[in-house]
Length: 133
Image 1 (tube, rainbow, N blue to C red):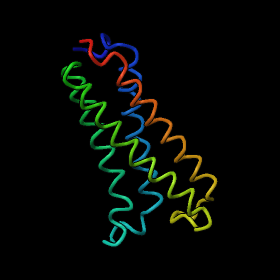
Image 2: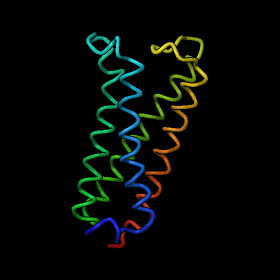
Image 3: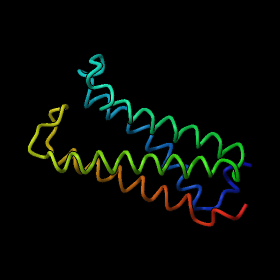
């Protein structure tokens, strides 16, 4: 099925997954470029690669088959919501600590808040009329 025939909610969720993945990886690489080779920080940055990978796989599966793929899209957005929820609120709780990138904590919280909002919207939109084919 071509994405032209997708319901508008799935189109928005689908494109949001592509944009989120395209933006989040470079931002995470910028934030933690100096920590990428240190195994201690592996879990701190690899989660973003998992989220982007799951979302892009879901985009591919949804493009192949709307009815099968939207399950992957919903699951991927659910995973992304959980990861961003933890990331945002841990950052908020530790706002007195500097960010690895050196960016101001306000900017980091703003970006993480936007990412969390995108994840929630993507999840909700992928769930709309889930039972219809």
